[in-house]
Length: 356
Image (tube, rainbow, N blue to C red; front, side, top):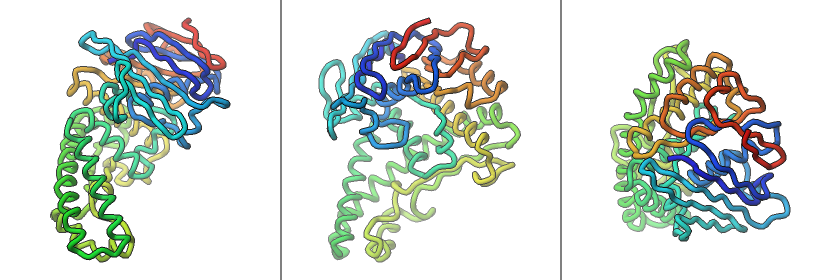
């Protein structure tokens, strides 16, 4: 897929933006604070339903406005052009596909695949487990159509069990929800494991290019309850402790994965730069896996790429981007020499975008 057109209203510094994008690599250059990152953020919102920046959703709103909107015309590999829209007003979201409101954000997100590398991406390696679960679940969502309804059923059962734990319910009240949690949780876990198994060889090849000094990478997955034990047994065995804590401990909602290396068996041994390159390898691998399993290539967004990488790594990454099928959006304060060739260039200034 690719963005043929991106329209943004009242988001961050943009009062109104309407930009026509091109296939291949699109480079956005401008001073800090000009709105380059917000442009990528708008694309990310249509694919994830949230910003990649930290902070409350209200921070997205332009000062003095009451609602923001992101609209895009998406061109798929089949040639079909599709309209996607997302509006937030107060605490309400409204998502649209081809001008028609849809009941859930997922019904819009399934049509749009955007993968973003930005200065905070090292949290994928060094940050909390929630970031890594989101990474895997986004990938699974786009290849396993059953994932979203299963996840909703699991979350509903989890809320019910937690409510019963807080009310000091007896075991017989917990059992029906534990059965639902166990069944759906095992299914979710199997999907995640399949995804990471498919991702691992692609990730190994990329790490050999980006962080060869660290040796062979190892992707380790922890499913959220003890190995060799069913989730049903783990839930039953954890009742007393869960009652004391007033929430459910075992389950895929506590899953995590880690990327370690022969020369760095703990993520604490990675420098910030190595963590950043490892995160980039994960994201590029995810894009490659998505491209292999989907009819549409994902759009890659690279925020301030030249300042995040040294010259050698930048050249290696840009070479890879130039030979992949998907559209790429890159921002920077200047245009790096390696990007001066066959790219479409834009200048961003004070919330406006002009093609160069």
